[in-house]
Amino acid sequence: MFETFVFLPKFTFMQSNNQIHVSSEVGTLRRLLIHSPDSGVGKVIPSKAQDWLFEDIVHLDTMRRDEYDYYVKILLYFLDPDKIKGKLAQINADHSRQFFKPDSPQYFNSDKVIDIQKLLAEVLENEQVRTKLVASICAVERCSFRTQEQLKNHHSVELSKVLISGSLPNKQMLFAPLPNFIFTRDIGIVINDHILLNKPAKSARTRESLLAQYIFFYHPIFEKYRQNILEIPDNEHHFLLSDGEQQSDYVRSTLEGGDVMMVAPRHLLIGCSERTTLYAIQQTMKLLFERSVVDTVTVVKIPKKRDYMHIDTVFTQVKKNMWVLLRSIARQGDEAKKRDLLHFFAPKENPDQLEIRQFNKGWEHKPTEIENLEDLLTDISKNDLGCTEPVQFVYSGNDEFPFGAREQWTDSCNLLAIKNGVVIGYDRNDKTLEAFQNMGFRAVKAADLLEEFESGQSDPATITDTFIMLPSAELSRARGGSHCMSLPLWRDNF
Image 1 (cartoon, helix red, strand yellow):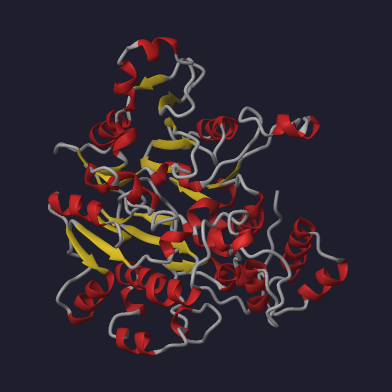
Image 2 (cartoon, rainbow, N blue to C red; image 1 turned 45 degrees about the vertical axis):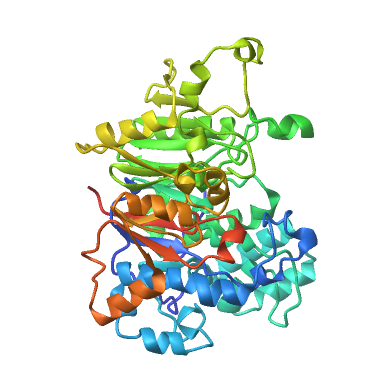
């Protein structure tokens, strides 16, 4: 267990309300963790892009200034408007982007929209924590002892940038960047008043996981919840297994936040995907049921394909009675009922077949089999969330071939609900936007909505049924949407 340290007086984080609680995907969002694209993203080279889990290299300045900064401004206007209201023209005119840089005196410094880099810098203010974390990172990255000693001498703010970007202040690359750190969802997830620390499947994200451990265990905003931090254990004899055996889903313990959805106060969804294994799901269920954190865990097994990756790439919730999803897997259970010659003689286990099993506390009993995704999501809306109105589905690409698959690839199903019926998504998925408009949603560009807020024409507190279109030419190439780029810490209950 991690020790508790007293922080130095120079610790500056605002501690007005450190509440942490998430019991749905669409309750009004009050606090979240993000990470703006850092300089390491701009150092991804073609030969290493896929090793570092990027499909392509991106243009960093465009990704930040013309795309991600709009994400931050929208979040601030909804969650912490005092930080931005009346300042938009001044912020936009500053080409150095001081407002968005955690190490700048002009940083927005919100305790509701929190950049994980700032938390890391504040954790590193403690000398004992700094020594331990630097030693851990250097062991993982196989640095020399002299490098380890030199790193400890950096100021905490500068050191946080080095540990994330992988580069020293003189721009020398010390170790690999962490371009996926912008997808904060994958490092952890809040389940009611507990925090589940995730275990990344790829070695490129090992350093992210280590940084997250130190932030969650040592930063004061999580102090009240330290006993509620859950870590997924490895197979106790994994080190005795051969390399081949260690790769088996039955002993490998990996789980990422994109495969975990807190859909209702007592109901959690976990995806079994190319990044999340059966063994990790089993261990997570044991932890949650033993502590009575939830009563029901539904496991959604999706095809292990790069274009799916996590369950939040194929469906997310828009409002209590509405979901966006990929039509091709929506009713696979119904399709499997059809019996013809191929079905009778096909292998009994189809790795590309979606499967859903629902487990209740006391899960040694036989789980409930749910035949298709739409039935599961309908049941959640009606029985877990108490919806009386009809449950609706918005399909990726407006269910038109080939746009469903094309737009799912650019995160049409990966949306962040800021509140019930107000979501952020990418502007490039035209057919999906058309489907939302057919459902009565307004589709509005992020820049236009910000101007409406600034002029008083619209109010974040009163808008409903709105799809906020985020510029996405570069962000979408990183293979993650607004749901991936958020780690909600606090949502209102319904």
